[in-house]
Image 1 (cartoon, rainbow over the protein chains, first blue to last red):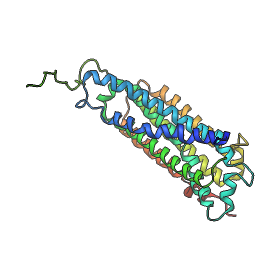
Image 2 (image 1 turned 60 degrees about the vertical axis):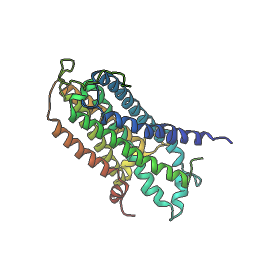
Image 3 (image 1 turned 45 degrees about the vertical axis):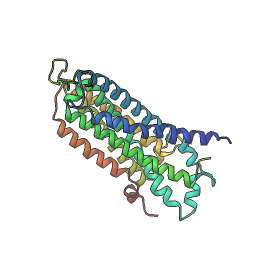
Image 4 (image 1 turned 120 degrees about the horizontal axis):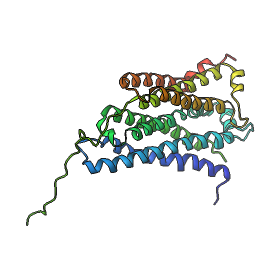
Length: 170
Length: 126
């Protein structure tokens, strides 16, 4: 049992980077949601905020890495101009061409909005730091950016997984 | 047997001097830059769909094709507009609600323009 180079990179893109982002989202969301004066003590604010800034920063970095690896490493194999490439296989069959024209075309573009949103969420959290708790509108904005980044990453991730199930990059 | 006494946890006093006021301009800058980056991506996606020659001009990498140019320019728009707006707004307080609404509008356009059933409407008829 072994992975080809292409399978390895598809795994890095979809499972390692994308998967960690999706799983870590719940922790970040809980961090934003619970950062309220009535829920935390003075000492708790500093600890929570440090964790939140580190977590959102790591997630923003992961999102950038995911789209960069997806676009510049995995996608060229998907779109190779050969009859065996996943793109060619999907387009060769009218029953599967929507997996390219709808799913892949949407995924490859919309995914790039996620890292910008995640970066903005991180910047808002990092800029206010422990003062974020005193700025409910900023906290809500950061949380919305974070949720939106997750939503877009989830769309791209699910479409990617379904396309890979149809025609894996091998 | 009584419970051991514990000091009660006191909720944080967020009015204390330990917290300081900061201008919200830097936050406005990154929000607007996110909207601008998304919109530029959407415009490039629609334009590339409508014009094959434009799509070819975005193919900076033969392996990646037009997606390389679309995403590079979207990221450039994000970073440059962020830097420019940050320089303009970093010491200013702005109406964050208004900035947020503008950002949401730009993001909505970005999402619409990158939605394949929408941008494929602009493909030339075969």
